Amino acid sequence: MQNKRGLLLLEQIIKLIIAVLAIVLILYGATVLFSTYFGKQRDLQAQGTLERIVEKLNGLEEGESDSYPLLAPSGWHLVAFDVTQNFNGNFQKPGALVQQNIICVCEKKCESKFCRSIKLPLRQGDSLARIEISVLDIWFTNLVEYYNLSKVEPTILPADLKEEEKSETLFAKEKMQTLEWSTELPNITKKYYDEHGLKNYVASKEEFEKIVRAIIIQESRAITDALGCDGEVGLMQIMPGTAKDLGLNIPEYGTENISQLQPCADPKRTAVSKCNKVHPENCNKAEDERFDAIKNIDGGTRYLAERIAEFKNVWLGIAAYNAGSGGVRANCNPLTITGCPANFKGRLYAEKIKAKMELL
Image 1: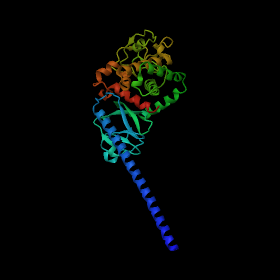
Image 2 (image 1 turned 180 degrees about the horizontal axis):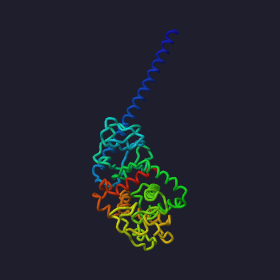
Image 3 (image 1 turned 90 degrees about the vertical axis):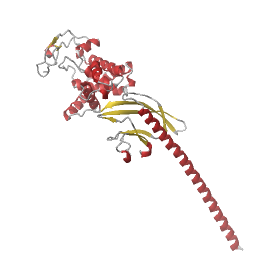
Image 4 (image 1 turned 120 degrees about the horizontal axis):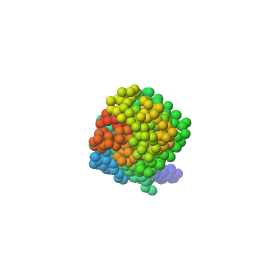
């Protein structure tokens, strides 16, 4: 009798175990199916996002900017790679796509199936196409994120600075921190950033300030009374005609020919202001407002902001600061920084400024 009861108990235990295992298997299967379904949904969403990006990129002309909303899986990232360079150090380019310009939607790593080659290459000759993407909003379900592809435009590679130039830049950077006018510079740059609507062309007010600091270093090495061969004066090396247009007071110096004089010997230099690098004794520092550090920076920053707004492009604006608006329009076709010849002085200047910005 006891044996029979024991067998019945054992049978019930076995049935219970089988029932529990069945429930576990059912739950596991449901979980797998659920994960597979939503995993495929995320994959499809990522692939759909890629297709829309590629379609948009392929429809853009060089130098054109546009904006439109995108959907991408929550926690995923939009990453761009070119043939030779990884643009995002946090992600590794899929090995199978090494020889392509691609854009990817990546989760923990970038997989080939979530990458697409793009018609508009990230590298065009010695220039790059910049792609900026920002998160706009997150659904309360936290399943998707809204992205905005805000700008797709050609940009430039920084110049390859010599060690001496790097040292001078870093020295001037440290020097600036000790000078009284440096504390006022952020206020000046913010003022003209807002007045000229530069948020559409320059990433931030801090970035614009960095551009101005790089120009000061390039132009004068942060020397307040620096003089140029063509009659330019001060921190941002403002020319006499430009100074008058900006409302700065300068004496009537007249002009002279210094084409044969060192260190400014150049046959093109036939009529420059008598206040110049060769003849500093002609300069009237008391009446020439270009020697006032704050007024010089204010005028130079305003002129730069006007050029950026005029061309609706930060690099063309910087090129025009050096070569003038007429010089940019005469040399750059199409009117993009990559449309400027590689040896055009305005483009070379912009490349120098970009290199120095990276050191600030």
